[in-house]
Image (cartoon, rainbow over all chains, first blue to last red; front, side, top):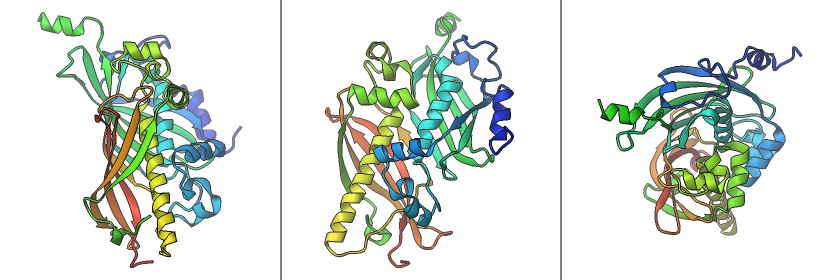
Length: 182
Length: 159
């Protein structure tokens, strides 16, 4: 206790791993539950050296992600995780934070990802999520499109990656029908 | 890998293909994207995807895998010709990623990369910045994946 990862420990104890509007774990979220604004802070997620090497070995075997000596000579000045690994971890943090309890129908893509600073072995990550837009799909009125901006930070508060991405979310039963009937 | 000066807008490379088995789809999903339609055939069938579907992050990561393998092939060829090898830098990010169709268990996706823009870095004179449109196409000829990816490429003149 009381060492370098104090910030994330405090965050976890203060219940930051819950979206603020969620009072019970078993509540399933539909489109109507997402309104523009802050959604919550999720984590912490510890990232080990072994995991960084395993992901890079399978999907991104560049020396800067695999080899300490080569990495120290690279632009990132030390062993760093693959950006695709970091995005995949962000996906998992969003799943654990709220997507796992959401009537998600999948995602059409990602508007933008910015890799700002390297993911390092031993990092403890926290993810801030914000709803930037929530609208009903024109082609599928029973479905909403919720666009999130997610920022993942290390224990020092340095932002590592920012992502803007939409997901399709089912609307509450009958929402589209009620609209059609006026 | 090639140097900035050896690259031209419009150049296209076929990166090879990858078959997404049900096992590989579930293994990736269990770790990073455990939504039911990525883990379970029945849940996949009932979803908009119509079958067990790979996580989009799995598809993007496989594209990266084939890009790196293609770069390593180019480096080997350059070495065999006695040329200097360019070591590419990291990527500052990407835009316009589209998962246009689901990648279902058993699908074989062929990836390609086409150079979209080239510019020199103002803050890092030893580097150029490349934007490439990388795409994935399934065995029926349908595009399933598209991304506009950015990377730092070393300049020959500066090395």
